[in-house]
Image (cartoon, rainbow, N blue to C red):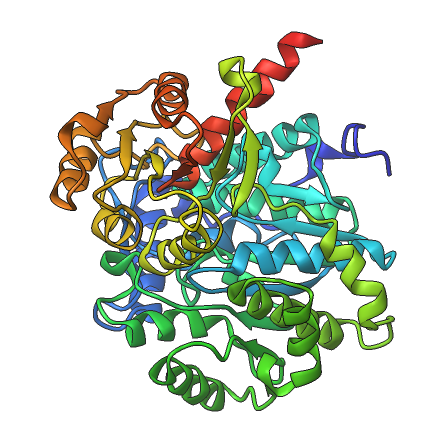
Length: 475
């Protein structure tokens, strides 16, 4: 069907099949809350998987949802069949890239494919793609409105992410896609995306320390949450560059649930060698190898030859991942910058390896434009990347559409951290909440030396949004 057209029978999208029993009408808010609590008790053991998520629903405005349970998303989608096959991807780092590689290969193979990743890049609806194109805003808003209306009518009290995931899955169903490539939002076991019943393949990418307050304080606890996407009888691809303790947790859980078909990129030495010879960075080799293996498992009858697939992924540009941009549209003069969403220890280490290899070899000084979300491990970003000879400007990104719980770190704290790592106070700058001003300062301060923009995917979004706005004004 035409993606730009209205969805047929949208008014019957969530037509109820059964009327509520009389008691539901007498005290619906209490029953909704009790339902969430009961499912939470059945899904959670101790503090496993529990976190603070703010409910977007007006039903319980003063009650914070404290679980990642599947009750609310299950309620939202109980009349929406999963008519598409899923490839489900979890991990701390690399899962977004793996999803992008997979959907690109599926689309190039003539398979009707949708993708759901988070957070969004520029617009709230660009986290949902249909055949490699963002879903049209009209369709997104139409379906989102219906999902939110259902949430309100039935007093579900879904979180923002649950509403978004339900919107994506409903769109996949309505547009009759064959495959959905789904990135886990947070964790895995109790993440809203794990409501899916029909999975062709699961993938677990690199796991590290992130979101500890939500998923656990150790990498093994986090690994157990990620492993929660594994299903009985469904093959699982595992990034075997993970720590041995992480691999043991995943393997033990897979055995427990009955998934005996585990696949590792290193087992295909020829594939790894080809990717390495193509010049990919080590983390990219692992991500690509995971994607290739998952593609083979999901679509065994399609052409899996490297001669066909490599040109497809080479053309893929994944914004905000070691992306080189020209700041000209924003600041009015040509200046290259490296844009990367590194925001935890592992991704910061990958960024440091790249910067040291490609930039510090020709320049001892890097000019950094940094932002961070509150609660992130800023120290890991600084310790891996910032050196005493560097220059740093810190900035706050603006409000994130559809994610009111995301707050930016105070630039003063980022600057103080940089100073603690030896950066001269005179080589720091507080740009407040003005991203354009931060880029202006960095350009003037850097001269001919490299500029790196990092610390948050939301900063990446702000920069790309400024570039789009500047380009649109030229038209």
